[in-house]
Length: 206
Ligand SMILES: [Zn+2]
Image (spheres, rainbow, N blue to C red):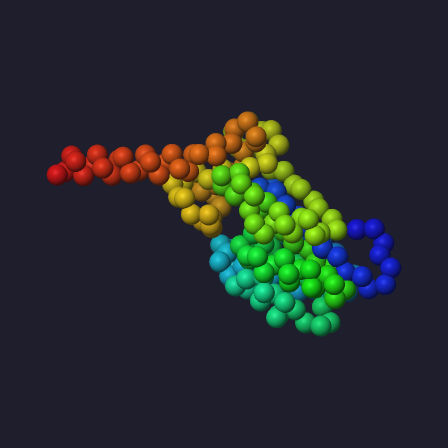
Protein backbone atom coordinates (compact mmCIF):
# COMPACT_ATOMS: atom_id res chain seq x y z
CA UNK A 1 0.00 0.00 0.00
CA UNK A 2 1.05 3.60 -0.55
CA UNK A 3 1.66 5.84 2.43
CA UNK A 4 -1.64 6.51 4.19
CA UNK A 5 -2.20 9.56 6.39
CA UNK A 6 -3.64 9.22 9.87
CA UNK A 7 -4.95 5.91 11.13
CA UNK A 8 -6.97 5.00 8.07
CA UNK A 9 -7.77 1.32 7.62
CA UNK A 10 -7.99 -0.66 4.41
CA UNK A 11 -8.54 -4.14 2.98
CA UNK A 12 -5.88 -6.09 1.03
CA UNK A 13 -6.92 -9.33 -0.66
CA UNK A 14 -4.61 -12.12 -1.85
CA UNK A 15 -6.35 -14.57 -4.23
CA UNK A 16 -5.37 -17.41 -6.54
CA UNK A 17 -5.66 -21.21 -6.84
CA UNK A 18 -4.21 -23.74 -4.41
CA UNK A 19 -0.40 -24.00 -4.47
CA UNK A 20 0.00 -20.37 -5.60
CA UNK A 21 1.66 -19.23 -2.37
CA UNK A 22 -1.24 -17.25 -0.84
CA UNK A 23 -0.50 -18.31 2.75
CA UNK A 24 3.21 -17.58 2.30
CA UNK A 25 2.42 -14.08 1.00
CA UNK A 26 0.01 -13.51 3.92
CA UNK A 27 2.62 -14.72 6.43
CA UNK A 28 5.27 -12.51 4.81
CA UNK A 29 3.10 -9.40 5.20
CA UNK A 30 2.12 -10.26 8.78
CA UNK A 31 5.76 -10.89 9.76
CA UNK A 32 6.74 -7.49 8.43
CA UNK A 33 3.96 -5.87 10.48
CA UNK A 34 5.24 -7.69 13.58
CA UNK A 35 8.78 -6.49 12.89
CA UNK A 36 7.34 -2.96 12.72
CA UNK A 37 5.97 -3.66 16.25
CA UNK A 38 2.34 -3.48 15.15
CA UNK A 39 -0.23 -5.51 17.03
CA UNK A 40 -1.31 -8.39 14.81
CA UNK A 41 -4.14 -10.95 15.11
CA UNK A 42 -4.57 -13.84 12.67
CA UNK A 43 -7.65 -15.95 12.00
CA UNK A 44 -8.49 -19.04 10.01
CA UNK A 45 -11.61 -21.22 9.66
CA UNK A 46 -12.04 -24.05 12.17
CA UNK A 47 -12.85 -26.30 9.21
CA UNK A 48 -9.23 -26.23 8.03
CA UNK A 49 -7.25 -28.32 10.50
CA UNK A 50 -4.93 -29.75 7.88
CA UNK A 51 -1.64 -29.12 9.57
CA UNK A 52 -1.97 -27.42 12.93
CA UNK A 53 -4.93 -26.39 15.08
CA UNK A 54 -3.54 -23.02 16.09
CA UNK A 55 -1.20 -21.94 13.32
CA UNK A 56 -1.42 -20.93 9.69
CA UNK A 57 0.90 -23.29 7.91
CA UNK A 58 1.67 -22.92 4.24
CA UNK A 59 2.55 -25.86 1.99
CA UNK A 60 6.20 -24.83 2.29
CA UNK A 61 6.08 -25.15 6.09
CA UNK A 62 6.03 -21.48 7.17
CA UNK A 63 3.98 -21.05 10.31
CA UNK A 64 2.43 -18.22 12.32
CA UNK A 65 0.14 -18.51 15.35
CA UNK A 66 -3.57 -18.03 14.58
CA UNK A 67 -7.03 -18.24 16.17
CA UNK A 68 -9.77 -20.54 14.81
CA UNK A 69 -13.20 -19.09 13.94
CA UNK A 70 -16.45 -20.63 12.71
CA UNK A 71 -17.35 -17.76 10.37
CA UNK A 72 -16.58 -14.17 9.44
CA UNK A 73 -18.80 -12.75 12.20
CA UNK A 74 -16.68 -14.41 14.90
CA UNK A 75 -13.62 -12.46 13.72
CA UNK A 76 -15.36 -9.20 14.61
CA UNK A 77 -16.06 -10.55 18.12
CA UNK A 78 -12.45 -11.65 18.65
CA UNK A 79 -10.52 -8.64 17.34
CA UNK A 80 -9.18 -6.56 20.22
CA UNK A 81 -9.48 -2.77 20.18
CA UNK A 82 -5.69 -2.29 20.19
CA UNK A 83 -5.05 -4.66 17.25
CA UNK A 84 -3.68 -2.79 14.24
CA UNK A 85 -3.37 -5.54 11.63
CA UNK A 86 -5.87 -8.37 11.08
CA UNK A 87 -4.87 -11.36 8.93
CA UNK A 88 -7.33 -13.97 7.59
CA UNK A 89 -6.31 -17.20 5.84
CA UNK A 90 -8.51 -19.64 3.84
CA UNK A 91 -11.16 -16.92 3.83
CA UNK A 92 -13.34 -18.69 1.24
CA UNK A 93 -14.66 -20.93 4.04
CA UNK A 94 -15.87 -18.06 6.27
CA UNK A 95 -19.14 -17.21 4.54
CA UNK A 96 -21.05 -14.02 3.76
CA UNK A 97 -20.43 -12.43 7.17
CA UNK A 98 -16.73 -12.01 6.31
CA UNK A 99 -17.64 -9.09 4.04
CA UNK A 100 -19.27 -7.08 6.82
CA UNK A 101 -16.54 -7.94 9.35
CA UNK A 102 -13.70 -6.83 7.05
CA UNK A 103 -15.51 -3.63 6.11
CA UNK A 104 -16.18 -2.70 9.74
CA UNK A 105 -12.59 -3.46 10.83
CA UNK A 106 -11.20 -1.32 8.00
CA UNK A 107 -13.65 1.46 8.93
CA UNK A 108 -12.26 1.27 12.48
CA UNK A 109 -8.80 2.08 11.10
CA UNK A 110 -7.34 -1.43 10.95
CA UNK A 111 -5.31 -2.93 8.12
CA UNK A 112 -7.12 -6.12 7.05
CA UNK A 113 -5.22 -8.69 4.95
CA UNK A 114 -7.32 -11.56 3.56
CA UNK A 115 -6.08 -14.61 1.64
CA UNK A 116 -8.33 -17.15 -0.08
CA UNK A 117 -9.37 -19.09 -3.17
CA UNK A 118 -11.23 -16.96 -5.71
CA UNK A 119 -12.60 -19.95 -7.67
CA UNK A 120 -13.88 -23.39 -6.67
CA UNK A 121 -13.04 -26.84 -8.12
CA UNK A 122 -15.42 -26.21 -11.05
CA UNK A 123 -13.80 -22.87 -11.85
CA UNK A 124 -16.80 -20.91 -10.52
CA UNK A 125 -16.51 -17.76 -8.33
CA UNK A 126 -16.03 -18.84 -4.71
CA UNK A 127 -18.10 -16.52 -2.50
CA UNK A 128 -17.50 -14.39 -0.55
CA UNK A 129 -14.09 -13.74 -2.18
CA UNK A 130 -15.34 -12.10 -5.41
CA UNK A 131 -17.45 -9.61 -3.44
CA UNK A 132 -14.56 -8.93 -1.08
CA UNK A 133 -12.44 -7.93 -4.10
CA UNK A 134 -14.98 -5.23 -4.93
CA UNK A 135 -14.72 -3.49 -1.55
CA UNK A 136 -10.94 -3.90 -1.14
CA UNK A 137 -8.26 -1.25 -1.68
CA UNK A 138 -5.64 -3.64 -3.02
CA UNK A 139 -5.77 -7.00 -4.84
CA UNK A 140 -2.92 -9.44 -5.40
CA UNK A 141 -3.74 -12.32 -7.72
CA UNK A 142 -1.18 -15.11 -7.56
CA UNK A 143 -0.82 -17.92 -10.08
CA UNK A 144 0.44 -21.44 -9.44
CA UNK A 145 2.30 -23.66 -11.90
CA UNK A 146 0.26 -26.16 -13.92
CA UNK A 147 0.99 -29.72 -12.74
CA UNK A 148 0.44 -30.98 -16.32
CA UNK A 149 2.36 -28.57 -18.55
CA UNK A 150 4.24 -26.04 -16.42
CA UNK A 151 2.34 -22.95 -17.62
CA UNK A 152 0.97 -20.34 -15.18
CA UNK A 153 -2.05 -21.93 -13.49
CA UNK A 154 -5.24 -20.09 -12.49
CA UNK A 155 -7.35 -23.14 -11.55
CA UNK A 156 -7.60 -25.66 -8.71
CA UNK A 157 -8.21 -29.15 -10.15
CA UNK A 158 -9.94 -31.65 -7.86
CA UNK A 159 -8.65 -35.16 -8.54
CA UNK A 160 -11.04 -37.12 -6.30
CA UNK A 161 -14.73 -37.95 -6.73
CA UNK A 162 -16.81 -35.44 -4.80
CA UNK A 163 -19.48 -32.88 -5.64
CA UNK A 164 -19.13 -31.14 -2.27
CA UNK A 165 -18.02 -27.52 -2.53
CA UNK A 166 -15.72 -27.90 0.45
CA UNK A 167 -13.35 -30.85 0.56
CA UNK A 168 -10.34 -29.84 2.62
CA UNK A 169 -7.10 -31.40 1.53
CA UNK A 170 -3.85 -30.82 -0.24
CA UNK A 171 -1.39 -33.36 -1.64
CA UNK A 172 -3.00 -35.90 -3.99
CA UNK A 173 -6.55 -34.49 -3.83
CA UNK A 174 -5.92 -31.29 -5.74
CA UNK A 175 -3.45 -29.89 -8.21
CA UNK A 176 -2.96 -26.57 -9.98
CA UNK A 177 -3.94 -26.46 -13.66
CA UNK A 178 -3.66 -23.82 -16.37
CA UNK A 179 -6.58 -22.63 -18.47
CA UNK A 180 -5.81 -25.23 -21.14
CA UNK A 181 -5.36 -28.27 -18.88
CA UNK A 182 -8.20 -27.53 -16.42
CA UNK A 183 -11.08 -30.03 -16.61
CA UNK A 184 -14.05 -28.48 -14.83
CA UNK A 185 -16.14 -31.66 -15.07
CA UNK A 186 -13.43 -34.08 -13.90
CA UNK A 187 -14.75 -34.46 -10.33
CA UNK A 188 -18.29 -35.07 -11.63
CA UNK A 189 -17.03 -37.64 -14.17
CA UNK A 190 -15.15 -39.50 -11.44
CA UNK A 191 -18.37 -39.78 -9.42
CA UNK A 192 -20.15 -41.28 -12.46
CA UNK A 193 -17.28 -43.78 -12.92
CA UNK A 194 -17.48 -44.85 -9.28
CA UNK A 195 -21.25 -45.31 -9.49
CA UNK A 196 -20.83 -47.52 -12.57
CA UNK A 197 -18.09 -49.57 -10.92
CA UNK A 198 -20.25 -50.09 -7.84
CA UNK A 199 -23.24 -51.09 -10.01
CA UNK A 200 -21.08 -53.54 -11.98
CA UNK A 201 -19.58 -55.15 -8.90
CA UNK A 202 -23.07 -55.55 -7.42
CA UNK A 203 -24.31 -57.15 -10.64
CA UNK A 204 -21.28 -59.47 -10.69
CA UNK A 205 -21.68 -60.53 -7.08
CA UNK A 206 -25.48 -60.76 -7.19
ZN1 LIG B 1 -1.37 -26.77 -18.28
